[in-house]
Image 1 (tube, helix red, strand yellow):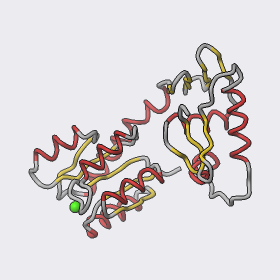
Image 2 (image 1 turned 120 degrees about the horizontal axis):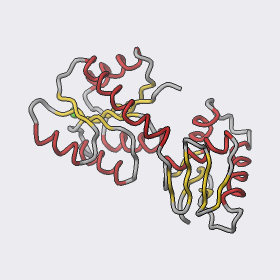
Image 3 (image 1 turned 90 degrees about the vertical axis):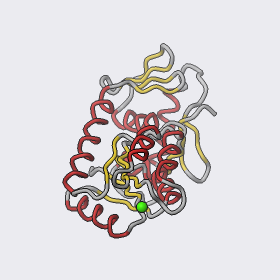
Image 4 (image 1 turned 90 degrees about the horizontal axis):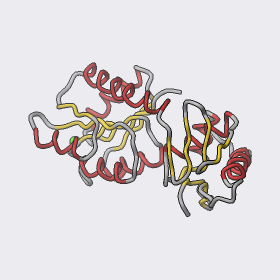
Length: 226
Ligand code: CA
């Protein structure tokens, strides 16, 4: 699937310049023209990369960045800063951004930075074990552990659990889950998500452990402690 990039930028000409270029390169592009919309879109769409302008009309880019990191969103963030605003760059990295780019910039420069950020997250995503509470998921063996108890997972169960482990404490909607795991739009008729959640719960709770996969009524599911 194509990498999904969220562009948070209020200057329409720059936002268009970036999104057209990225679309030509095969990225799926989402845009937001203020900080609040940027935050909401990041949480609802779970993009793979975020391009975030510092100067925004409502919540500034630094605050947006900090809030995303406070919510444990690990998505790579590239900040756009004004020319020669060195305090902005330092503040951006301190707020949790991964890199910054000074305006004005050439599109090729932006693309190179994005590709570097995409590559940087890739090895971590494929190998490092993910943990939440007493649950561990090992991407290299595709096995789970609850405490000392080993849990074997089918391919789809693994993918579904990995999605939750990469977004702990976040409510994932049925549409998000469907799109990520099954890769096409959800018609609303299938109960396949419920079925797989049930499989996962029975395996994760087979030793009498407390529930970690919770139903959020009318919305979706979340991996959290209660
Ligand atoms: Ca701006």
